[in-house]
Image (cartoon, rainbow, N blue to C red; front, side):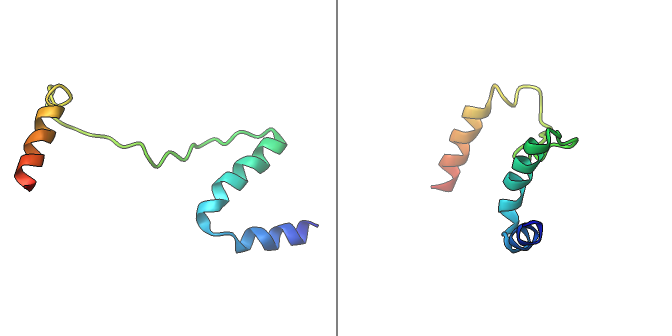
Length: 65
């Protein structure tokens, strides 16, 4: 059965590997040391950037018309 599992995992597309890896780790009660959070980013901007965000977006919409 392990050989079949290895073979099936090797055939998976890369985007399906992470959820399967979490499932297997859960079965072993092992927690990952590093979290994969591709949606997190860093932004450096002037201090009032968040306060002015709606104004900035409106300005960009007007420029694209």
